[in-house]
Length: 269
Image 1 (spheres, rainbow, N blue to C red):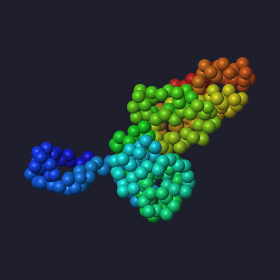
Image 2: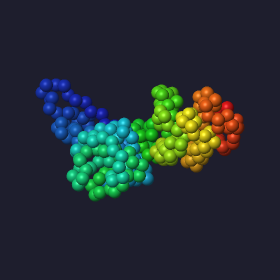
Image 3: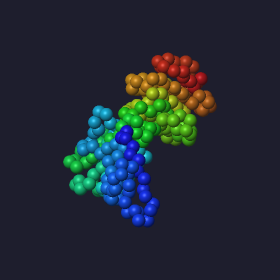
Image 4: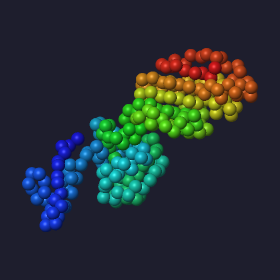
């Protein structure tokens, strides 16, 4: 970060309109504000276009986008909210006087986005920026990614117990659903570890255990291919066991099957 400059503001009535720096230079309040802006952190910048330079990451979450806007404070700084469209750039971006774009800051949650009209700027942050934690920036490493169904969603303190983690649990999600979603999560969070919980909703809704397991194995393959250092993979065993009387495929499913995991696994034995 930039060097810190120490200033002291005179409280004397006769000097209340000036600020005296320790260097002995008297500055007007406007110049003081300009100096403070120059000394401000450059952890987040607005970059022309829809991508970030190699030494910075694109801001991609709602919380991080709001924080980035507050730190940069562009001229038309109102936060316009979230969208999911292939008609505008992905991630957190800013527009002012761009045709078809209401001036302000937007977050496009579409994984790829679309066209980048002239005048659009993207919020780009250093990897060490605090807003990049918890998956706030695309490509920034996340310590642990929790992904799956309500067993993950309802674990409300994952970020407290695992600082730098991200939680992508949604009640009712199946392995089949997560198979479609996991690639986007891996791209967004770049996790070191993955905790995966799914399967009970598949089997509970009549999907065969064999088909569910195929989806589960495909998810694990994507995790491994993404370069996660390890994967902790779980199929909720107690609930799946209770489904065996109502789902014949659960009774026929082998107790052990190899899926090439780099860490211990509970297959719902």
